[in-house]
Length: 149
Image 1 (cartoon, helix red, strand yellow):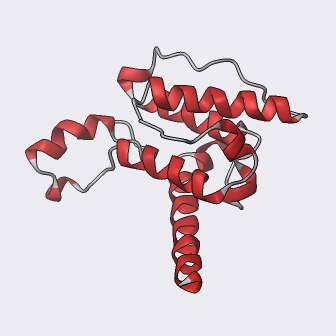
Image 2: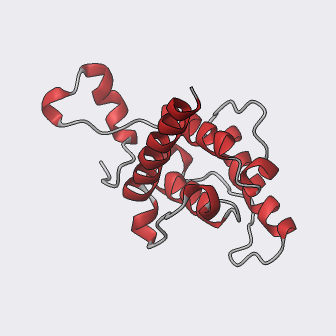
């Protein structure tokens, strides 16, 4: 059973790393190499939330709490991650249960994957024009994979 869980975790790590890089962070030359350690200081999470804010018209006036771009101590890491989590909860309206900044800073992979999964589920994805249904067309203006509509 442990092997199956590790395999699932590895697949999730690869998938979310590709998603956050290809859809968001590569545009700022800040790719994630190791999702467990690269998100822990909060810089990439805050950058991610800024990119989301800039791409969603309804969020462009939303404020992201000030964050430390070059954190050097654990306190800065926690403040940065808290800033990103606050944005995710308040502006994206993502319900996060039992996920705190310390969990992300400490590199707890289950909580990191849970956070990314919750955000992933909330953000719409783009589909080709041929496969869009009327309901998907109305969501297409919020498409977040890099192209503005």
